[in-house]
Image 1 (cartoon, rainbow, N blue to C red):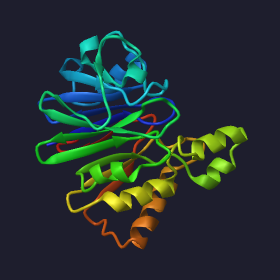
Image 2: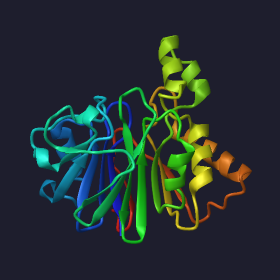
Image 3: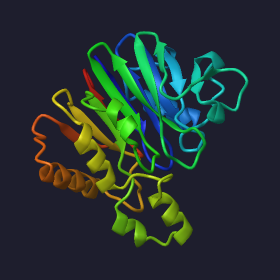
Image 4: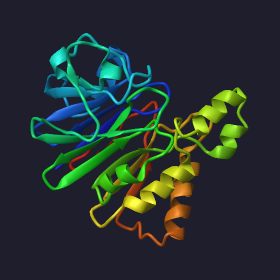
Length: 251
């Protein structure tokens, strides 16, 4: 049974723990070591319980090469790792780490070979995917009817256009190698949720160009349009500054 602890999610830093009680992985480490340890103390997980760290890509809010983590516990694509050692990940391959299986999916972002992950433990599965401008039909075929989804819902388009950001940056964020809007995120999820789905966590929300209520309303609107019964699906938002828990035996 899977549990997850999102220690931080957003453009100022990302880190998520996924565990089945036997094997624990960290997906992305975009916090300082002191901040990571402070938030880790808010979970039942201890630092020595961590079996591996997986990086989605090399942008600074996801990748902080912490010296406290042995290189043999680090997994990333070659473009992200930029090292001759460590564990190099390849697209659409499945890796066994302890009692967890991790499928690597390519994402569409302005960092070479960025990825998302599907983590499986026996009958439960979890998607972690942020920092992608779109999701391919092929990727969606792997994402259907999972138990848990941690999925990017980065911006509200109107709020983003109203910011003082340079036009080029706004276009980058809205582009195919940028970030998913609330509506795009909800549309993709409406195509993949199924009877096994228990929770969806909306991740990497922009603090300047989004709000949790706008993200949740976009999901409610989309799922109503698609006549998806969300009575048995919990939908919530991750947070930049506080820990968000979920899954089995979450505290």
